[in-house]
Length: 364
Image 1 (cartoon, one colour):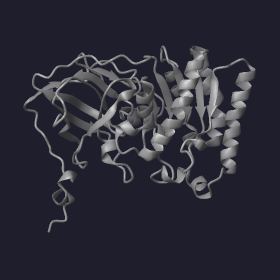
Image 2 (image 1 turned 180 degrees about the horizontal axis):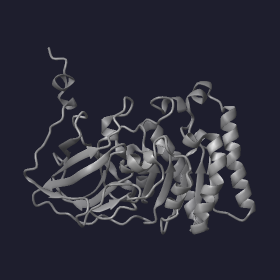
Image 3 (image 1 turned 120 degrees about the vertical axis):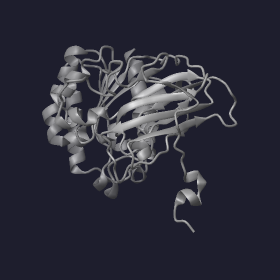
Image 4 (image 1 turned 180 degrees about the vertical axis):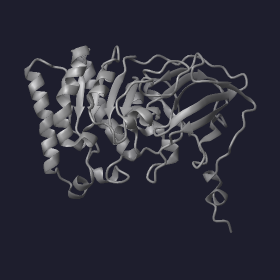
């Protein structure tokens, strides 16, 4: 008897496809719409910061190429959809599924009614694959709106999307508000360690709120540098800035960077809401089920920043305590005591999205 699980259970198997029988498109072909890569120009690298912009070597050379938050949206009556991709700068990890770090997933539906329909399945030892992500099967043949999420921890060197020959392509529906919510932070904000891209909390909240997000989570490198703040400030018409980088900066880094970071944003965007978020529970807190002294000190850093700015007339500065983001049972929400599972990301999104929505409703 074989020990190969793909032979024991055929549902564990995947099929590598060819390019025949499909109409192929790039991410820049109209009427497809690529969201989430705010500074990218058509034909350019799939990159989260502008070409030539410098924040730090790790961000400039690697993490900026990871396509967390990127999504391709379109309407089609396709009976089959394939993804043909070549990846690079892959972050293969022992505690994150390749379908999350290197894969794409697909949702169907409009607005806040999007539903998951497929994930790319592939040999994660390879850097390129061509696979089917959607087959109509017994579903009704009709037009559907699709959202394809890009990998969280890989760069995309070459990409094309295939629809069965003759399938229609139309523009997607409009966002309820096209002003982006820009999120700056750490590995958790980048999506570590979701099992598939659509389960990163920024993508979940994008579906919940029917709004575009810009994901600037940089694994291990959300340090609050002035260059990162200056980049965020170049977003022309943002709905909100979410600053969630305490997990990398630690308390000493927050003390050094938080005020200057917000000052840079306020110089360009004096009225745009800013939401400061403290870090989610980590290992020691999960075991003890109580706040540590370091946690309480961190909370005081944020509360002092909030108090000072409110007293100086800034009514659009806000704070969210990250300690409660995993809900009543945080011990079940991480893969390693630090990084979120899909459950953890869902809990974060369910608690953060209403806060964001409430702030925006009050600001509009």
